[in-house]
Length: 113
Length: 112
Image (tube, rainbow over all chains, first blue to last red; front, top):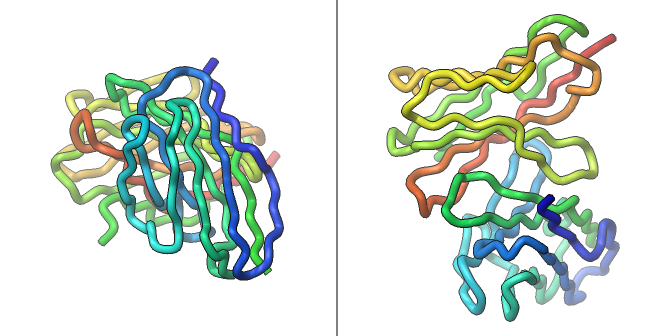
């Protein structure tokens, strides 16, 4: 079974803090993704990566950056957390060839005070 | 502009009856459609998919129907069970390199 592991299930941070959300997948998938989920807004794509060292902006990249130094690991960084970044963050991976199916982690619930 | 729309934020169904979740899309280039199920405090899990060359795909209690001319797909759950209570997301892909575009989700409540 594919396993996507997100390092923290729940985090509470203060405005202005730097936040790292880590994601590791164990199935050698090329593609990895970061989404945020908010009530009434569904899943919105923040950043994605097709391979190591590669990154592409999604629909809502402002206020975020990412790092993919190793194939299995994709990190989401909030340089200076703000209250409107309080959300559920979901990491996902995808194998090639692309069947469309994403494998999601359990999510990281971030609260910014 | 939303390319994938789930117009019903919520749906309540009695246990044993049929649940029908609907999804509309605007992009005629979408070639693959998926449904995901999400419980609170968990990540979404893949449920069922359908290619644009088909009009129906069935997996146990779950059936997805695709009407390309209407740009509409639906997920049928028969019979519905309380454990099906979750948020269901419709998603669509355009081409083999395309990322998934998600709808906003429909919260299904199945009452015993």
